[in-house]
Length: 154
Image (cartoon, helix red, strand yellow):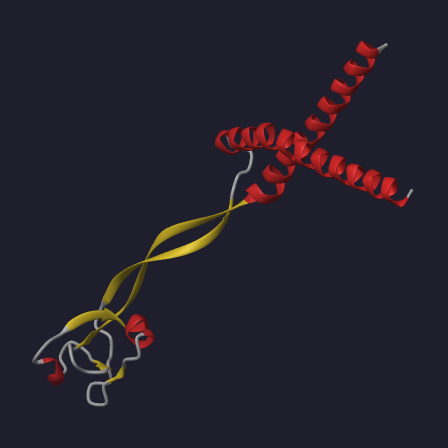
């Protein structure tokens, strides 16, 4: 009779751990594993204007204010940095320039790829028993606390 009870307890504990593991796997794969952050290099063509080392205006290629230095830059990028058009030349663009910059994007990931599946299985297999033991310890301590409390009241 005692052996049968031990097998029932073992089976009950195993079933609970498997349920926790499957739940963790599904939650992590379907809910948490569906998005990813990815840094992407973006090339953008912009109208080409010129700035100087010391000024706060952007100019066209033939402007007289470019005699000391001329640094090519995209017009949109110059405006983002606070440059404004030169009042003499108007900062009209001459050609285009390709600007490269990095952007962080949230990408809808494929949660069912092999790497995610393996990581989620490992997480579920190791975390489920730990969670179960943790909660069993909490319940056991609560029961001991309540039984001690009742024995003190008597």
